[in-house]
Image (tube, rainbow, N blue to C red; front, side):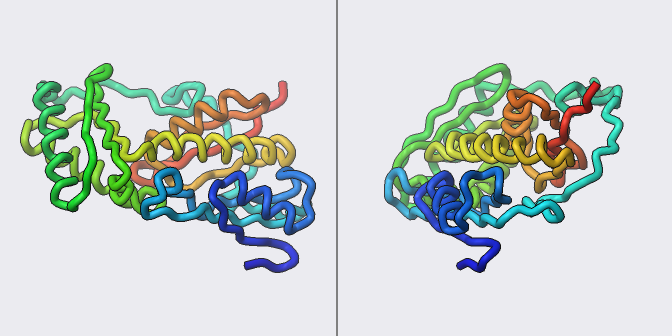
Length: 254
């Protein structure tokens, strides 16, 4: 789908889609375009339930810069004592007593639940987990398990929340769970890093802030890490869960 100012391209990867779109619009490089990732590729590695990447690219001009995100004037005073240099809110100890969790038991519950879930879906896959710094790190592998990812990771987010709920109800304590299914987390991280790089180049040129769509804490951390590697760019988080967003902004010149 295309007109003389924008084009939507389906491709096996985000980069392939961007290159094809730039070529169709007769643009030399991405700095001349607004790039919006509408859909990430899923399933292409194993060929099961795969969907192609969908990218929208439009021609940039001096009066309109649209990344399908909110542009904001660069007038924010970011000297908030309650945030660190990356924009994360500092955490304070709660006065409410916390229930001590048996992490080994929580890990066992998560593995048993996910194995049962996979079986109930009629899928074949393996579930493994370890404890890392009080975090439950669980990985689900197998070609058929990509069905548990869903479009834009919709299903995996639901599985993640459901698993956390089961753990809390069975052990009486909350937990920090990092769940990856069919390497979705790695693919998502790579896609966000590419997006952050292209967005940073635009912000350095435009000298304007850009607020991204609300994301979970893992995706926000990926973007903050990416922003810290680009000269002239700073980032911070704004809003309350589950509508907390990352803001990319140009660093103030001294």
